[in-house]
Image 1 (cartoon, rainbow, N blue to C red):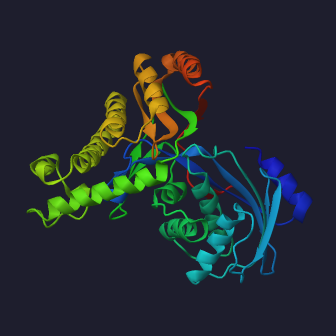
Image 2: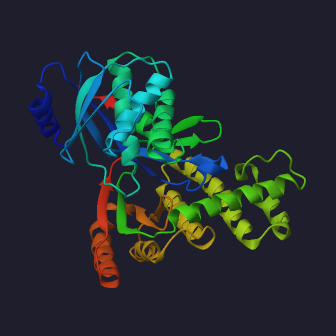
Image 3: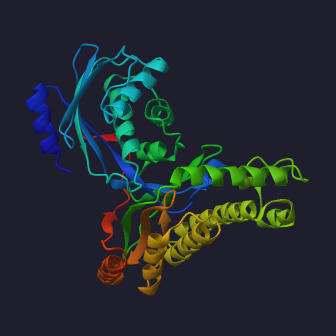
Amino acid sequence: MEIDIIKQQFKDKFGDHGTRVYAAPGRVNLIGEHTDYNGSFVFPGAIDKGIVAVIRANGTNKVHTWSVDLQDYAQFTMTETDLPAASWARYIFGVCREIIKRGGSPSGFDTAFAGDVPLGAGMSSSAALESTYAYALNDMFSLGFDKMELARIGQSTEHNYVGVKCGIMDQFISLFGKKGHLIRLDTRSMEYQYFPFHPQGYRLVLLDTVVKHELASSAYNKRRESCENAARTVRENGHPHVEFLRDVTQEMLTEMKGLMPEEDFMRALYVVQETERVLTVSDALERDDYETVGRMMYLTHEGMSRLYEVSCEELDFLNHIAKECGVTGSRVMGGGFGGCTINLVKEPLYDGFLAQAKDQFARKFGHQPKVYDVVISDGARRIS
């Protein structure tokens, strides 16, 4: 991303003395999908695409913001409670309000920002924006929040000012990310562990179907309900310790099969198996065993398609091409019903795979998938 362009536009709007530059990344999730609300594990990594902000305290209680990408201006005061009209400004406004709620006292500032996280591709551009400003204000005004609290500030911003009831993974990884490492996060205890991710001779690439099927949010809620129902059935039938599906083994679930609707059983079976796959991938990464990692990715896709039923024709098609081309691992990434596949590809196969995927997909669906190469990178930081 051209930081000089952001700096120049900041200078044009606000002058150029005394500025700082901060950044925070988007993310991918290697494995562990639809597990967060089941108290289980996720396995994200920060990526080399994110938000960069130029910022300077202005000694007033006013905030002046400029979006370089949208060429749009918004302002608000630190004491205001009415949402800004511009939806993008609500993320910055929300971060300020959540900091103040927690006893922080930032003063006003001038800022310009831009990003290269593709919007709508499931790489968490909104969390990158929240994390950039939470980290920047905490550092610039010496507010003393730790990174976990900054992640909660970002999550609360989504809940209270954007209207999205998200989990905490996206904000967490944007702040805690580390170059060359994925993080296994336990979404129940919030304990986390770094795992090395140095796939020598492999590329990590996302293929974006550029489709989003409408039923995503209602289907998400329905699946969440199925998971809660299945966990309750197991808990009420001899396993009182079960809080989430995270606590259920495949053997326990199979015992209960006759006591729950088939659909609830299928959804729960996917989650139980996905938890096991995350642990298998943890072991594999410690051995640099990327073949096992890839095999687990394919199994996750199969589970999301057949058991959890959140894939779609376009995603299944890309997954099938990946398999035909000898790609090491491929799966749908994110909630499903459109969006991206994440692919672990050996270098020599990379060009051929992309050519096949673009050509065959365009012939079937009338447009090419978008291609995003990603590298696992550091989390939120001050650049200068």
